[in-house]
Every structure is written in structure tokens, then in C-alpha cells.
Length: 285
Image (cartoon, rainbow, N blue to C red):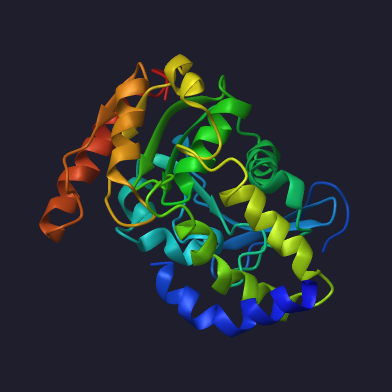
């Protein structure tokens, strides 16, 4: 059964791509690389990240790209560091085990979402950051809601942009869209079983397949963190879920829609995000 799953993943990797538009001491940090990135290592997990530095209020940015959320995605759909670095201390990272990135560690099939929240919060702790704002694209939507659940007192404002959500008429769109990542991962990490990868994807996209995957509607209703939703409406980014979040969250705002097309609208959305973040960051910054 495991071998069959591995063969199926490897065989269908190319088609799934079309669908989807180890370390040492705790707290060890390697010096910056030539591209301005650094590595943070803890408990067998190695995270590549970029820290813009400066004295601005911290803004944690989660690139899109599904399970291949990596630093190279920071310029899609616009140059996030370029737009915000002058006013904020921008921080981002390669997702653990993204096959197009350099962050590595174990697969935790029973903690699919939480394992990534562990990495995100550990990096911010390592950098000495207590309070921060967060902006996330695509899979960054569920990650943001999980961070709001895990560390509600640390996040002053959140911007889920083109967020992933559950689409009942296409219930496996995210699971199927991750097969290319799985096939590439199994090639790079043959010591990991295909069964482990299947459990990881199932727990992430099938086990609690509803709404935004990481939190319930009741949690969103109770969330007191200001949230600006920038909707999208493609298979993996359902407009209906984004708007339901906006209706449920007591301190929500919504951007103009559509905000990415034509491209001339993107600067308008960026201005709105900047105004939203400025309104909710601590007055001392």
C-alpha cells in the first residue's frame, strides 16, 4: 500500500503541479548568507529566514505557494519586503520541508499545521520579538488563524490575503494540489515513508476539512484581533470562505475586490494594507 502510494505520487507529480497554481544545538544561528538570509536551528529543525532588521515594528510575512511557501515567493503578487521594509522590520522564512526552499526537519503527520506554527513562533522568539503583525498569502491564511489561536496576545493585526479555504464542491483540491510537493519530497527524503507523507497531507487537508482548516467558526467569532481580509476566488482560495470570515470576525475589514486584476489595482490594496497596519500597531513605534 505504501509503495503504491509512493508510485502514485511520483507518477502524478507533474499533473498535480498544474493544479496547485537536520541540525544541532537549540537556538543555534548561522551567519547571514550572501543573499541576506540566515539559518536558525533547533531540535533537528533547520529554518532559513530573512530578517530585514531595523527599528520598525515587526511584520511577519508568510509567502504563498502552499507547501512550497518560500522566500522567493515574497514578490508575488507584489514585492512585500520592498513595500513594507521602510516602515517595518520584515521577517519571513522558508516553510519546513518546502522542496524549493532550504528549511528542513521531520514530518509530523499528526501535527501538520501545529508543526509549522511551532517553527514560526520559535523563529520570532529567537529574534526576540514578542508582539508583531502578520500578513500571509494563500496557505498563509490558515497559518495566520493558527497563530491567532496559539499566540493571541502577541499579534496586533493580521492580513490574510488570497487565503486558502475549504471549498465543498472541490473538497480535495488542496490535497490533490499537494501531490507534486509530496512526490518531490519523497525523492529528496527517501528515508521518510510514503505512508507518513500521506498521513501528513490527510491530517492537513482532509481530517478537519472545513472552513479555514485550523480554527472553527466559533473561534473566529471570538477573535478580538483586527483582521483585514483580501479575498480571491480561485479553486484553492474560495471567495465565499473569505467573506464568511469577514462576516464572523468582530474586528474585520475587507479590501477592494478584485484587488490583483487589473494589476493597476494592486497599489490601491497595498495602500489599504499599510493604513490598516499603521492604525493597529502600538503607538510607541
